[in-house]
Each structure stands twice: as structure tokens, then as C-alpha cells.
Image 1 (cartoon, rainbow, N blue to C red):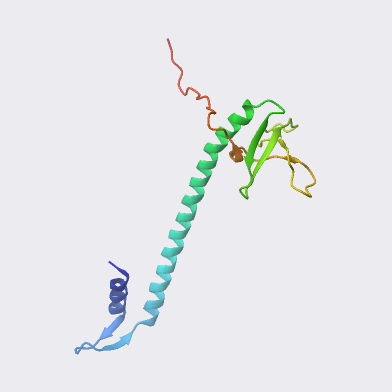
Image 2: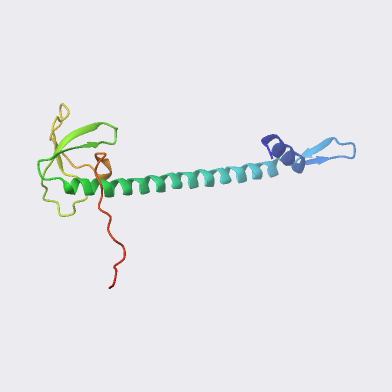
Length: 147
């Protein structure tokens, strides 16, 4: 059913027609209810689409974070790596030690900090770490084999 067919069916459902086929009355309150119903359906669809996109982005970031953390953990202190910030800019940095016990970010020191920055230390999330092409993540075995 296309848009014009839907409009025609709504108009005919809300119209009162005499025996000769002339429209004698139109239910404006009914039209307002139809519009409210369509708006709520549209809002639900937009919310569902937004939630689906957010869940996909979180899943993609989780996969990237796992790979980025494995790469970052494989580096020695002082090794150089790159990361991409939220603006899409790529930065070159070296791995530094941190006092943080959580290890939830990649502690680093920028090689070329931006002009006017107060500090050259940055703590990007692991999904922002640029992992080189040849890097392989070790796969953990989920099941134990019993002899």
C-alpha cells in the first residue's frame, strides 16, 4: 500500500457520505487521533533505530577495544604507537607507565602535542588505539580438554 492509498482510506473512513456520494461531514477529531497514532509509531520506530545503532556501535567498539588492549599490552614502556581521537585526528605517542590500577585506558605521551596544550599526556580508550595490520590477538580456549 502506498502513501496515496493510505491517505484515501483514512479520508474515506473519516468522511460521512450521502446517497449521491457527496461528503457531508468529516471527523476532525478522528483525524487528530490518526495523526497522534502515526506520530507515536514514528517516534517508536526512531527510538528503536537509534537504540539499534547505539548497540551496534557499542559492540563494534568492544571488539576494537579488545584488540586495542591486546596490542597496547604487548608494547613495552617507551614503544611508539598511534591512536585516533574522537575528532578523527591520528596522534603518535609513546607508552608510559601510570599509577592507575584499573588499566581502562592507554596511557601515553604525545610525540608532537598540539600548540597550547597544558600537558602532553593522553589517556585514549582502547578502541581508539590504531592496531597495525600484522598484529594477531591470541585466542583463548573456552573449553578445557580432559584426558
